[in-house]
Length: 103
Image 1 (cartoon, rainbow, N blue to C red):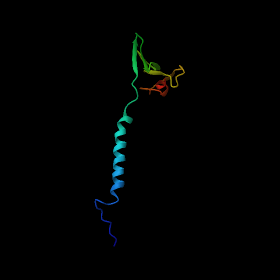
Image 2 (image 1 turned 45 degrees about the horizontal axis):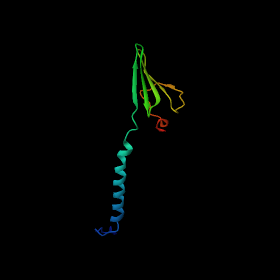
Image 3 (image 1 turned 30 degrees about the horizontal axis):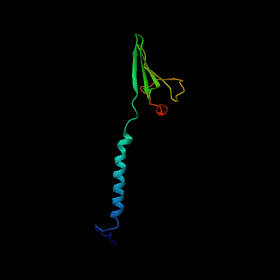
Image 4 (image 1 turned 90 degrees about the vertical axis):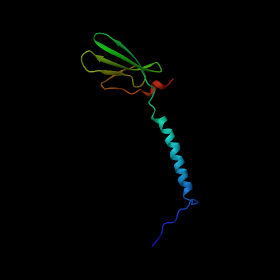
């Protein structure tokens, strides 16, 4: 019958365990930085009798326009690559595209 080796405080296994624990602590401290949301857009609204128009900008760059008609479903006009060509998207929200972060 074999026996497990007895672990003592001077055992060779404590060094790798300590290294693993330190790596986990370092990695865990970086998680809040990863969890931070991307830059929040500034939204300006205009309203008339027919609709509400919300313009979404980051770094002064217009990337989305949300149209809320007096009757009907809201929709976005969205520029996904920065060429000024807006595409209609029927969704509850749109992501900030990567190109708005470029200076």
